[in-house]
Length: 175
View: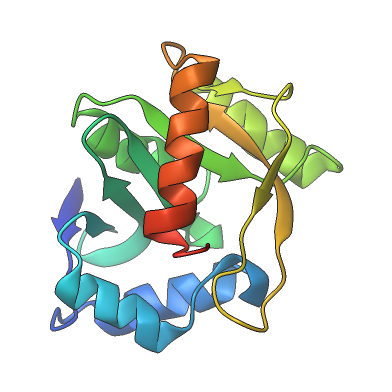
């Protein structure tokens, strides 16, 4: 049975979250660990949920709960646990909040990135390939990253553009 637990900076699972975060995302697509911990401590809209199966950690999802949408910042599943429904379960946990979902994905340039997009499409998200998007840098000295957006079907171009403005100002704190 899979359990889903929100974690905090003081959680006994913080080291597991750290491991998954560092191992699954390149430096350009994540913030510095100290900044991640500060968000966990002080940003009420930012959440991390860790999935465990038989008490073993299998993955996590981090997200921002805004008034009009939920931004899924990171989703990672232990490589040995992929294909067992843990990623879908984490996504359903966040989707149950009832807001439209928005996330960033790498462009479909190889088999792995195409598989990731298909995974999200099976969960009902649509690739917004008509919208040019560049992820702002997570901190000074880190690069911007060309990515694609995926959203819940009900998001309009207007609501996506408004969400991108929110991401730039609130998540990336980019001016």
